[in-house]
Image (tube, rainbow, N blue to C red; front, side, top):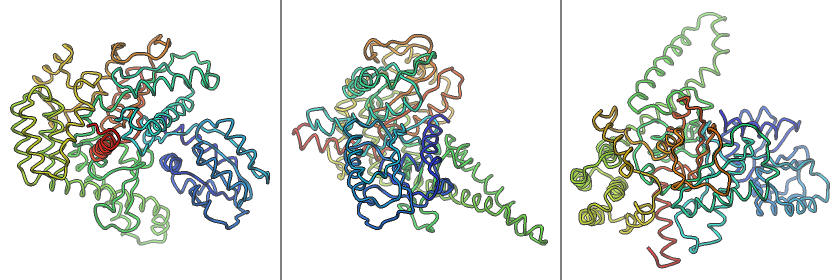
Length: 568
């Protein structure tokens, strides 16, 4: 429970030593950090009676001197200015200031100068500057995630801001784990190199004292890679529970907003999907869709048994027992209806969009050769009226990534067919993807057809057959973890930063994907961590992607590149 525990531990320490009634004041980033680690009922137990945003607190003038204000903010210049104004006209009895990362000396001076009323009781840095979604998966929720696709000349200040946020998040993670890593990066990616070098500079030069933990264990590895090394993973339909919910409905900070897909009672409009708070989800989050249906049926049957026994109340003792068990009963009822709702909605979407047909072709494109058959299958689906525009676009993209060098004529035919069948997708988006993440730009062996070892492995897999045609794809990350476990990650593809090299066998590896992770990849990490390889992997990224978000970032990057440089 590495990451979730680290975040929970920090929030515990923030709240436990301040007695009495509290208001917790957060910003748009820390609200995510707190909400995935702590439930509302747990906050209430810590005597937190109000949770507010730091910018909305500025609007209000009403004094609340009976409350102690606990601020947990990112140390941004905007937040420091807001604090400065709020300390000048204090509304609360005490101020306790906690920041999710390192404060600059100048920021501390501003806060000290602003505290004329001497009501600030403490200022502390607690390094929880990342959103711990699962035990081995974190995100930074960067809104301007498309920046990683743009050359530095396009918008230098936005790119600098993006890189600084990533370096801050990585630094906080290693401070929370009390480790200083050796660092490697993806050779063909300028932004991975820049982030790796900036992180090394921070950890080994600017703040070397802070990162000097004097530990005797083997130094962990931080590997910074680029989403464009594997553009296939975020384009595929998913068939395991967590990944599928995100692909078809959407998950944000372990919450699913159901208002987009139908009318639900108020208490069911937003549901929590957290492996920490939901035992059924924890047991099934990586299972296939077919198995989920069976497991939900079992859960419904169990619930019906309990509901039946509750109807059979005859004595005072029965009544007392029912009252004692009622909170558990209500929780179970909520859980059953949540999972039944999600699976029912996803089944509808699968049927409406003919996703089983589409997904079979996607998996063939991602995993197996055979250009002629692939061209025919994609053409047939482009002509099928039941296939949605977004699915047509993804199919053409997957075909283009696989066969960009082999069949330029047929690729042009597919571009033209896409333009006529789905005119809402501007021509050029597929070409922009190839420019960003084509074969000449990628590090690693995405399709297992460059390296003799990989070619042999793919042939063996082809002969053996595949257990499930819909989940045969393995992301590039899976092969990277395999190479690391066997000590075969090539220095030429993933060079080290500076003169810090690997010594001894690795025990801990953090892989950060600039451009965002997918739940398919976090599943691969969780399963890898159960294999007893002796290495614990942690996955992080600038955002959590599904195909919709990946395409939105791609369109936004294309738009910016067009307007600022006339390129593309």
